[in-house]
Image (tube, rainbow, N blue to C red):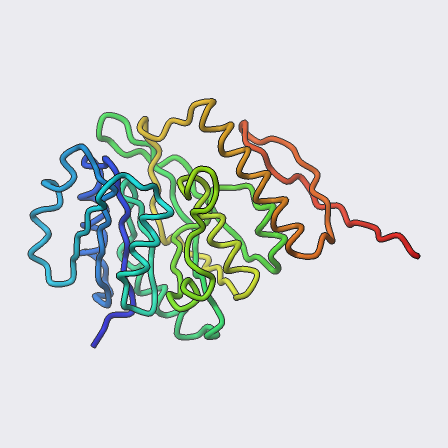
Length: 267
């Protein structure tokens, strides 16, 4: 019988962290999973680090021919997944033991039109190989697509997608000037949320790390802000031009402070 979940670990030069991610899948209380590791042409010791786990019949490894970016990596994963649900696990993060069991419980009591399940997460700082809990991030229910469009906290995690819905919306968008390397998480959810339901689970289901390898320079902030504005404008236009965005900045990133109703002139 085919499992319910494929946990997808996209990775690039995360040899120091990837074993912790893999072990967190192996340690799940629910064994209803496959694990697919997609290596985006790493140049470090990633392949040797995961070699000891390749004995497992439910663990698969694929290496991209060249570094392609997260959007193209996730589309490659989508083409390989044959389970009903896909859970994305970044290679420097890890799952609490009951994540898949909780997700499965909520899937069974949710409508078939639900395309995304997500919960709360802990953020951990990593220094010299030691993990220190920093903050707990509690997400929320989005009652409409506009609430998600202007959501400016950490991106929701874990992201458990219904695979059929991902196929229906065409997967991850890689048509932008950065070929899907930036904001792929927000943009795939925007594709889904305009057609499908999403469900929030008020439990800690993900552990995310902060470390030196994630530092964002001013050039990357410029790129992110450029794409954020293009994305915001695109969806506000696509959704009928009902609102105008009032922009601001949070920690150097462009955000929608509020949405102003557009008044139509009477003819």
